[in-house]
Length: 253
Image (tube, rainbow, N blue to C red; front, side, top):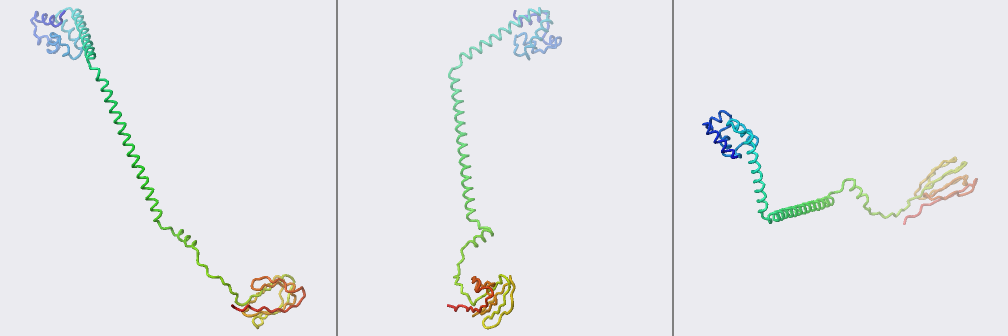
């Protein structure tokens, strides 16, 4: 059954124009004409195509079931034709295309990888160079930076000072008397002038300094410890002993 021919003949037998059918069925004229020409691709879709075809066939008093069955056969033929066309296209496609595409894809991937390697190497080199320059600059600053006040003072303190010759020359003489126990009467003359005369008790100390000489008398020499210019002379006699002594300052060189 030729659907388009059947529709057109039925319409013409009823002396109906496409405009009149459009007014009655509310189906646009171009869709009615597409159905009569079996140009189903003009229709808005398969669902609308079936609905329009069913309404048009019913309006023309055609056997709706036969019309729809014929349309179903047309649909099967179209789908079969499309599948065969796709199959033929696939079989005729050159086999070298796929490897070529794979090769191009592999080449692009390899090129991109090498590009990232180059970029990474350059960045690493830049970072290394900046680090070296920063370290060198820091070292230079440390060398040029003057020491702080504390460090400068410490440096000055640590510098060895010229030692002056310590030629200690003792001028005059010094006598120290320390009463270790009991008591002792004593008389001291310094450079010819009486300096002390009296009794000292245990624990008392007397010191005398002269330029030339010191002479003294001890009434109990065994309890008096004597020092000359800081040098310990000890006890100059026994307890109860009376002694007279005189110490003279050494002559200068």
